[in-house]
Length: 352
Image 1 (cartoon, rainbow, N blue to C red):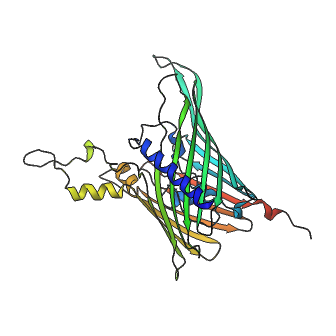
Image 2: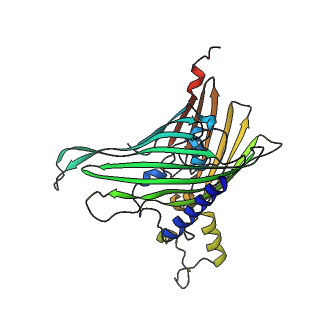
Image 3: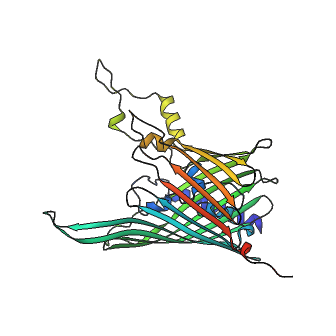
């Protein structure tokens, strides 16, 4: 039975790859908020997804194959103070059922703030709101001692002034977990679906589909864990022409093209996100990460600063686990990520 499930999962992923070989990225899709990082732990270690298998419920939104019975009755909430009046967050709860698997239900929202109605002459006539929400039902199951699978079903609703849209999407993931639980590798296909109703009755817009692979390893003789992610498996060339970064020959005035090696290295690194976590005892974690693509696309050439870098801390206090992170997107500021998790079972005393 386990081999049949594994074969079905791999077959489905191959079908998805063949149907989305021409998938586009960055601004060509709707519901882009689905890719925003909610977990402070993920944000601090590069800002994408993690393959760490230590029962952290905030990781399953982006990697459902990590959902397991040890998360049952856990609750997690997150808030992100993004840019300007934009803020978003999520709440998630997990429950396990015998012979069925483990489930995690969550809700993710984003508020773009209030906007002013105005006439062509600049006269203000009122205000309107804009926001998007995704309701998510995740499922995970252990195939054997080494492999697990999982999936998320997403119900997406977007409301931008008087324009509304509804969509459906799924994430599919599989993970390998070593016997000593020190190493984990995951393959993920996310945002597989379509827009059901469009904003203006026009053409259906694509969702931000992506294939990702990642690994995490805890060192044997040091209290340190590292994470390496490779994103956008479905699309190799992530570069684009940026007039602000073109170099010209001072004599001929012609544009100086990058060498083949420079192009290859730059493209390869745009797929890579790295992160690390220093474990200080059982109650404190110091985290850091680097996102090369974010730095390449968002930095100001004359003053790059710390764009692309991120850091954070995790603290366990009594029955609660608190995480905080800052991630540098641009010189204008860095979003603040706050996450709080707990196990509701710890609040109830079991009677013999």
